[in-house]
Amino acid sequence: MTTQPYDFGMIGLGTMGRNLVLNMSDHGFSVAGFDKDPEKVQALEREAAEHPVHGVRDLAEFVAALARPRAILLLVPAGPIVDAVIDEIKPLLSAGDLLVDCGNSHFSDTDRRTDRLEKEGLHFIGVGVSGGESGARFGPSIMPGGAQEAYQRLAPMLQAVSAKVNGEPCVGWLGPRSAGHYVKMVHNGIEYALMQLISETYHLLKEAGGLNNDELHALFSRWNQGPLQSFLIEITATIFAQPDELTGNRLIDLIRAGAKQKGTGMWTSQDALNLHVPVPAIDMAVAQRDLSALSAERSAAQKLNPVTLSGIAVDKQHLTGLMEHALHFATIITYAQGLSLLHHASATYRYELDLAEVSRVWRGGCIIRAALLEDIRAAFAQQPGLSNLLLYPVFAQDLAPLQKGAREVVKIAIDAGIPVPALMACLSYFDGYRREWLPANLIQAQRDYFGAHTYERIDRPGVFHTQWGQ
Ligand code: 6PG
Image 1 (spheres, rainbow, N blue to C red):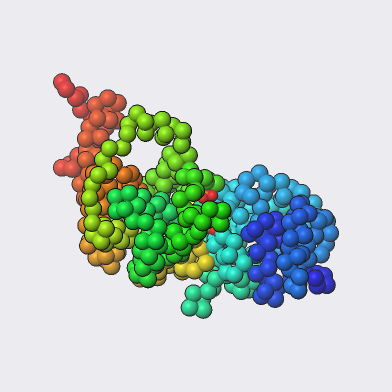
Image 2: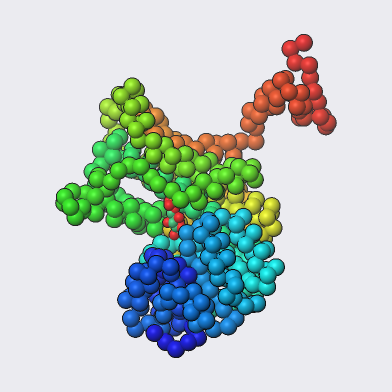
């Protein structure tokens, strides 16, 4: 407890909201927290004990407790709940107050809300926050967008609570309007693809390589010391070693293999399709989550189409060496796809994103933090207009030897009947992106044949139509 007025308000005291409040108070900011659920308010007060934090059950009391102009953070589930909270609190606010949506809102909702509230004299900004529970508590990566003046009001607090890499806070103003939520959405798209690639790696190592959980734990731990070093590789190593409290067996083997999703990966693919930017690794990751949920259908299909190709002997040592290269290769391609979406989206939506800054903010605290982001940051710092990492000579040099591993792994997977769709999507993207000629001339001929859609020629300017087959 502290005396009023509080520096900040937080609406939504679930896992993320509560931990962010505690993090803010660790850094000397006083915070009033509100939640409709009295148990969540109690949970905050219990944990806050000695902190300058006040849990409130009444919205009017909460608003009245805040220093003016008010700055109120929202950490509530994305979607209609955000609008409901805004509608409820709006009559209690005064001109100049600032609402900060820290959830995973769709960027189009953020634009709509910003426009609406600015017209009514209130400020609203969308801020992506990544890092899960422990990130919120001890240092997330923070992706703010919206009016720069509004960000400046929050900057000292956001810098204090964010993760730090070499002393640099993993936060920075990214662009106007919904830029922050757009960058967070693409962060999640990359997260989906990396998780899918790691799970395909697990599948192959377990079934084609015969690695047990101890070996997987040791391998991922080793990989985490090398170029693959990242949060997702690190937690994967730990997962393989985790015992189950109920049975004493490894927990990983007891988890039902159906992946859930809240939709941010799908939004990334949807917007990439709208903008005509290929991000096949992300598309495939979303499709594989959907496939994983169809367990009854897959079980029926397995009976009709039994897997009979599993008897392939692969040397463990050989396979793990290839896999490290394949995963490294696909990881670079995945970041390349996500960042190329940001490059194009920035032009379309006039975000003017600085992709070196985005990579800098992603280096710590977030789910996709990785050693590789340091090189990615350097690439964009060197060449700010870079439309694709594959056009940067350092990455081209890195990918040349790694692609061999990816090709070998895909061959092994095909022979073993083990699906590696995201890895294959990465390899095909690479093979397509680096070819000046692709067979789309035939598609143009077909379009012109059946629909008189016309085509261009390589030997003369103009637009042509042919009476095909005559
Ligand atoms: C993060 C995560 C976070 C959340 C995902 C999970 O950056 O901290 O991305 O936002 O864990 O939304 O998404 P799914 O439930 O869709 O897997």
